[in-house]
Amino acid sequence: ASKKNGRNCATSFSPSMAEERAIDRALEKDLESAFEKQQLRMVYQPIHSVEDDTREVEALVRWKHPELGEVPPSTFIPAAERSGLMVRLGEWIIQRALQDFARWPGMDMSINLSPLQLQHDGFSTFLLDCCNRYHIAPSRLFLEVTESLSIERNTRALLTLNMLRNLGFRIALDDFGTGYSSLSMVKSFKFDRMKLDRSLVMDLGQDPASVAVLEAAVTMARHVGAEVVAEGISDAHLIGATKSAGCTHLQGYFYSRPIEADEVFGYFENNWERRAEVA
Ligand code: C2E
Ligand code: MG
Ligand code: MG
Ligand code: MG
Image 1 (cartoon, protein in one colour):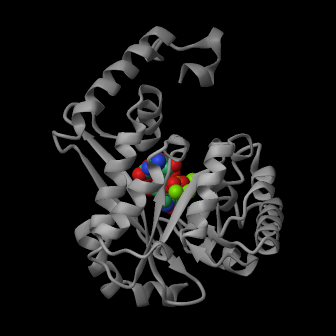
Image 2: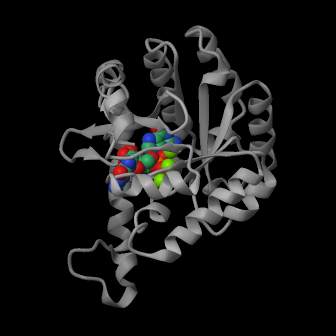
C-alpha cells in the first residue's frame, strides 16, 4: 500500500520498507514449514472451450496460513521466489497437480510456471519424471509462463521452453497485455496459446476502445498461430464480445471459481453442458 500512495503520503497503516521486509521474512519462514504442515493445496478452475467440448482446468496453488488464513498466491509466490523456495514449491505444485490430474482421464490441464523454475537445471527432468509416473502425455498439459520471464533476455529459459514444446507440451503466454514486453514476447517464441489478462476483458461493453484492443490482440495471436483464452469472464455479458472477437476459450467466475480437486469430475458431469448452452 505504501508504494501505491507514494513515499511522502504513506498512511499510518501502511508498513514501512523495514516492516515489509520483516513481514517478508516471517512469511518466508512460515512457507518453509507449510509443506510438512500440509497447509498447501491445489485448486482447479475450469476453462471453457468455445469450439468443442474439451474439458480443461488451470491448476492454482493455495496456502492456508494458521493465523493469517488464506494467503493469496500473488503474495506468497513472489516471497518464495525471493527466498529461494520457488523451485521446491514449484516441484510440489507439479507433483500434486499431476497426481490429481491422473484421476481425470480425457481432460487437459494448465500449470503456471515461475521463471525461476525454467532457469533451474533439473526442471525438465523433474517434469518428465512426473509425467511418466502418472502416465500423462505431455500434449495434455499447457505450461503457462508470464511476461515477467522476459524470455527474450533469458537464453536458458528459452531453450528449455523450446525443448519442452518439441516434446509435446503446449506453451501458453499468461497475463498477455499487462506487461511492457507483450509484443516482443510474441516475436521471440512460438506460443501455442495466449491468455488475455482480465484487465483487457473487464471493460468490454462499456468502452469501445476495449473492443478494439481485444480484437487487435486476437488478430495478432491468430497470425502467429496461437489460440486465445479470455480470462476474467465474471459475468454473462462478457461472453458475446469475447466470442465474437475470436477468443477460443473462456475462463472466469461466471463459469466457475477455482474448485477443490474432489469437485472437478462432478463439475464437468453436472454443469458443463448447461454452462455451454449459456455461452
Ligand atoms: P493467473 O495464472 O493469471 O491465474 C488467474 C487468476 O485469476 C487466479 O487467481 C484466479 O482465481 C483469478 N480469476 C479467475 N477468474 C476470475 C474472474 O472472473 N474474476 C477475478 N477477479 N479473478 C478471476 P489466483 O489463484 O489468486 O492466482 C493469482 C496468480 O498467482 C496467478 O494468476 C498466477 O500468476 C499465480 N499463481 C497461482 N497459482 C500458481 C502456481 O501454482 N504456480 C505459479 N508459479 N503461480 C501461480
Ligand atoms: Mg495462469
Ligand atoms: Mg492468467
Ligand atoms: Mg491474469
